[in-house]
Length: 290
Image 1 (cartoon, rainbow, N blue to C red):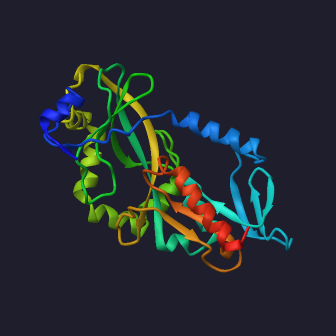
Image 2: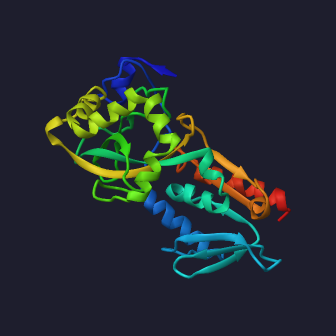
């Protein structure tokens, strides 16, 4: 349903919209708490969680009953019948281990997402501006947090390492590989105005704040630097953005025929995570009649 300015003010008096779509069932959660709860349920049902291990080998095993061999840099060794890869920011790295041709098709580019923060506010609902439909991002938005504050943003610029949450975190090998890739170079050419706009807001926060003030009546003097996140954006070699889920089911030969690779799960990945898990699980059970 399309709401008018008067309708908008009834829902959120501080919103500056002229027209809007109202989604009454949208809510905000503490995602860390959700994942901890899912982990406990998994362990309760016999699952085992191995943390702080970096996978560096995925190959065929010499054990017929468990044909996939997995080793980590920390020395852990696992063998399995099937493998579901859902590596988030590390999905390109894991894809390259399974399929050497993976990096020739596209690149997963890490973007540091910077938020501003308002400690207290009476705004009680999410407010999203109209996004730029030429790029697969939500655009600036205002998000109430569980602690009563507001997240304002985001602004996205290339990160200096795969999991680079600040300008101090730099991996020169990752930077070199990313900047020299066809995906990155063609992306910056294809979307130069949008890229320049993001960099401008990162260097001069005033432009970022002005965009946020157009969404709602918030106290500019109380806006402060907020948290940073990192997201991975899959970019084709021609520079075009991949704007939908990309899941590779049992592709390739050898162990590839026993692998489901969740290569790219952009927003709303967290929102859809349980539905994605159900979808992937059904595919796995159907393929191998588990």
